[in-house]
Image (tube, rainbow, N blue to C red; front, side, top):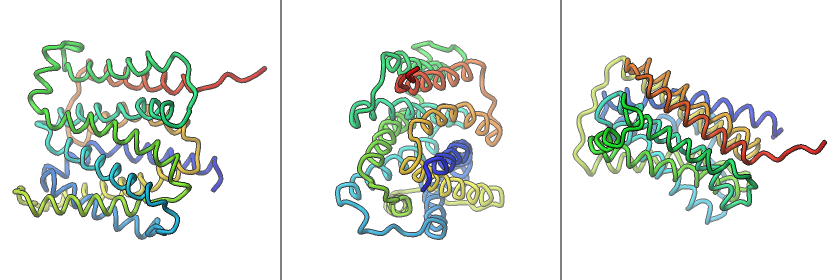
Length: 296
């Protein structure tokens, strides 16, 4: 596939993903954190079978098949459950912001594991992204340690899952770029995620799933955005300009938060937007650190 076209397809994923935080939370409120996520990934998997098809097993190395499956499923569980278990809608948006540490972490993983070159801007960029997340968690107080502690203590599972998930997704992107050899396993990975969630749903006590028209509409929209988004992203990172895609994804925190605030009717404070912009700026600095100067 043409590299420019693959990059454009990858950029579409950034737009689709910006809807995920608000929609996943909205679906989980009607169907439960686990049941809602299971329905989302089941429908997304069916959509991917139609649009992408089931992957050819012969194109995968056994190592990548195992590593990719484990990393992808683990990340999706962290993302969906962190949003579903958040104590409030506003907290769900904050949890989503923690997840958006992954662009900076992806650059860091590329430097550590694939030989990506970078200059000294990588350090202040990563620190600024972390500062931005801390600013968001401080609520109206901004960078306030006591407020941050109280916020995290109120929902440690959600924040913990989001933080771990950011690292997992950064590793997944790095592993896929280096070892997938052009093979697209997204359909298999999404179906494995759905199966894992259904097993958890069956083996643990979960709230009843209440299907109302608004919930069903949001479920269909979420599944479509998720399925098409991951299909587009995998094409982008396999055949496109990964550095450019990472840079574009750095703007996702602001766009995602704005859309989530509308979907969930959850107004966000000025301090939140300050932190979101810091996350974007820090991620952009990380990206800029990998740019090599052009020769005159």
